[in-house]
Length: 226
Length: 169
Ligand SMILES: Nc1ncnc2c1ncn2[C@@H]1O[C@H](COP(=O)(O)OP(=O)(O)OP(=O)(O)O)[C@@H](O)[C@H]1O
Ligand SMILES: [Mg+2]
Image (cartoon, rainbow over the protein chains, first blue to last red):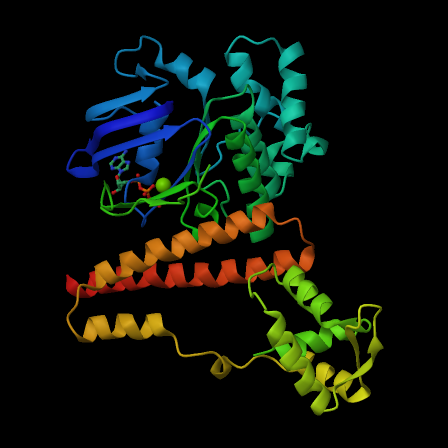
């Protein structure tokens, strides 16, 4: 079953055609990597897939629900989508654990339950010991893991990650991919933007964006994948 | 190639017979360079001829066990202390192909994209092998080496595409 589907999606910013007609489906348990030069529309694609932005034309559905017809897109976004932003977006005045708890608390989960959940996910990404530190007291790699924990908490069915390996060294980058891959193997759909071929290679499918379009024969599928 | 020296390296931690060398070579290199047993025996007999290994009897099934000699250890130490020269590597067919495509007015973007897909597929397979590799550190590092090389090729292809696009403007 496809968790997210984009059908003939375009996105224009005035004169700029960020996406020119993209169709893409990501199924449960599937990891799809999006590559392409700077400005080719990768972040735009991710924002549309997660309901953070609206297409100029075309349809985006998450688990069968057409986002343009849904009353509360924000609720779908909170309950089903985990997002790792290109610039992380951790809130500086909240500790690591509080940052991870936030999306759950916005869902109405009480702190008494949200905190143990957050600690469990922080442990899963290997940084439970820094739970009570603030973002500025963390290394780049630790911050990246906290941002990923925030996207994982609450068993999201769709994970969208925009360059989640940022400026990490390659061994740490591999660990991040291992985490995403594990979630994917547990049934989540993952859409990963990266400009590093080594990380894209963890995907079942790699697509190339070029000037707002998926490069024609650009779908590289691993024949025996899953 | 360095099969000779690899066998010496394996023998430096103790006497072994041919089949054992093959298994250990493949385990250390993640089966990325399959080695047939014939190659092992030919290499061993050359090493023996050059005085770098010597037979030290046979096991109960009559398989000959070899051990490394002092000269063998010296040869091995020399290998580990010498960097691999760029010129030891074969000419890069891909670079030549792209150069010829440019020179011959072929659609370079197509050549690049075709190669990119193939290289990505290889990279996906290597990554899958790495994920399922139960072997130790040696195996992981060999697979990583191949991954880094494939990645360098992929980056170079991106670069070719960007540069040839600029030139065509
Ligand atoms: N809010 C906006 N207003 C105007 N133009 C925009 C806006 N957001 C994106 N764009 C344009 O849309 C195009 C695609 O941008 P996008 O951020 O999706 O690229 P990208 O592939 O993620 O690039 P990068 O690799 O640099 O992150 C670019 O030309 C960008 O300038
Ligand atoms: Mg971007």
